[in-house]
Image (cartoon, rainbow, N blue to C red; front, side):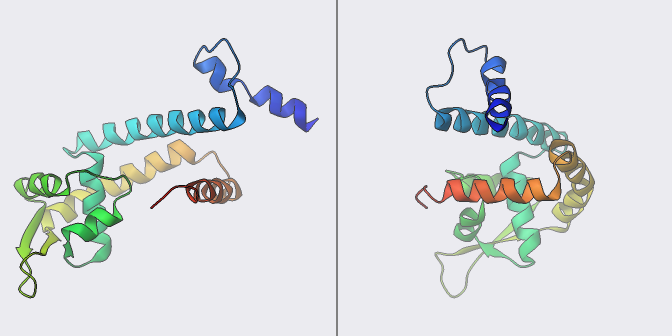
Length: 164
């Protein structure tokens, strides 16, 4: 019975992509499912953040700074980002131009630039908290808590094979 259920579930992505031949391996199908799902989710978040004048990366920086509660060095922010950002300095430049962060060179080590969140950014994040929570619920609210924990566990397990 389980094999039949798996066969019925298998092929959904194949159908969505209008792929004539089955995937070569279950690994290929799983990874392409992951990429397609990630793309769809990222698109929805990007559209939401755009309404507030932000990119997903800018939002991520602001969330990191709000969560920390105190200024952080640029490189520490880069290390904490969800998605790798090649130009953290440019990203911080744009946030500073928008008056959402301030920068201050460390007095102990002049090479270190600390970034702090502004009151304007905290107000903006406050406006986004509800819509972001609503989008989380829309995207994965149909999954049970057990399914969400299992999904997180499996994704973390899959990432173990990736270099840091």
